[in-house]
Image (cartoon, rainbow, N blue to C red; front, side):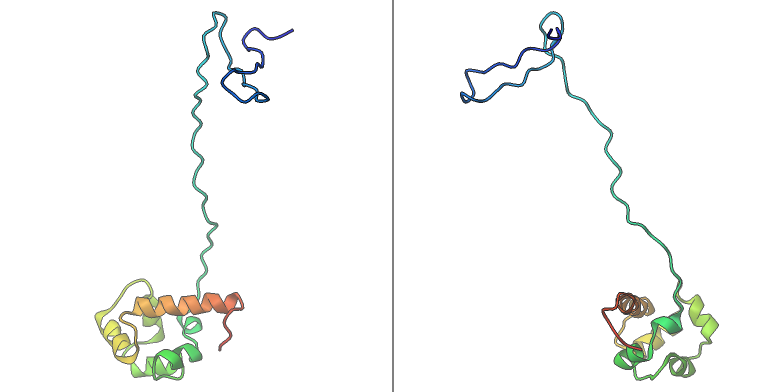
Length: 134
């Protein structure tokens, strides 16, 4: 027995001969039910994030420094500056005009942040096995 709220599948005169019209749910008095249902939008996909602290001397490898500065390693760079290693580590989050001027003088980078960004990119490539340097 057919449920009273559904019309039978019929062939419509407005469709191809073998096409079937899908019935719309109707009420007892033959009114078509509104099937417009809104669903909550799913949250956009979020990337899994995990913060990893990488020290500045691990980012600024000898090869990176030789490519971008005239220094053979991070210790030589620090020796030429007025800063101590603990001060440089603190500069990762903030900037100092004297340090920024030093970085501009010794490298092709306009800012310390730009130098770190490039070094982080190379660090990631090394971790992925796409870049091999020391």
